Structure formats: structure tokens, C-alpha cells
Image (cartoon, rainbow, N blue to C red):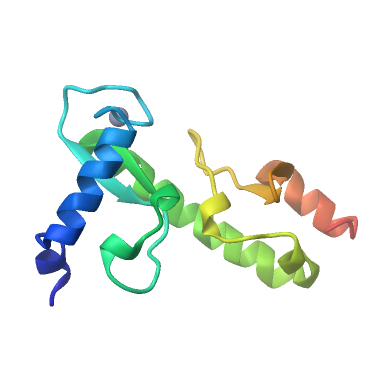
Length: 131
Ligand SMILES: [Zn+2]
């Protein structure tokens, strides 16, 4: 089954509707409910699209989706660099579901529910041996 075919599968259609309902049929980034809405995958897990946990799916309008995707890709690269340079960070970082994007790529690290660092500080903390 191709990815395009998977998106036509009733299991994805059902999942998509549940996410749209959860988000009130509005873009989670700008709040607009009048534009075309997409379901954004914050992280592509293995398996079918409908197996993605709900907390990794976000309703976004077409323009916010287009804006967010390259920022997330950039943040993932930053994340990979940080992890490569800070072996001890692995115990601190959960999965990519903890990656939040604002207007520029900003990486927030959470230890359970508590934010412990964001990207502007991560490099300093790494150098200081605190991460
Ligand atoms: Zn939007």
C-alpha cells in the first residue's frame, strides 16, 4: 500500500476526524478555522499513519503546515547534533514528541514534564558539562 493509499484508508480517515474534533477544527498554530486543514505528523513513527499516537498529530492550516515543516526538519538536525555531541544527554531526552517549534527552531528538552533546557542554553550547558 502506498502512502497516498494509506491516507485513503478508513482507519486513517477515522483518526484524522478524531484529531480534527480534538482540535476543534482549527489550526493549532494560528487558530484559524476557515482555511484548508491538514493533519501534521510531529514525528513519523514506524507503521501505518493511523498507528501514530494522538499526541504526535496536530491540526494545522495549509500555510502554517508549510511554514512549520522546514523548521521542524532544521530542529531535528540540531537535535541530532546535540545528541551526537552530548552522549550524556540521552538519559534526559525522551522522544521527538517533546520537540516544540516556535517562530524559529527552538528545541525544548523535557525531563518528564519539566522543561530543563531550550536550544539557546543547551550548547552552554553541554560545554559546562551539565548535560
Ligand atoms: Zn494556521
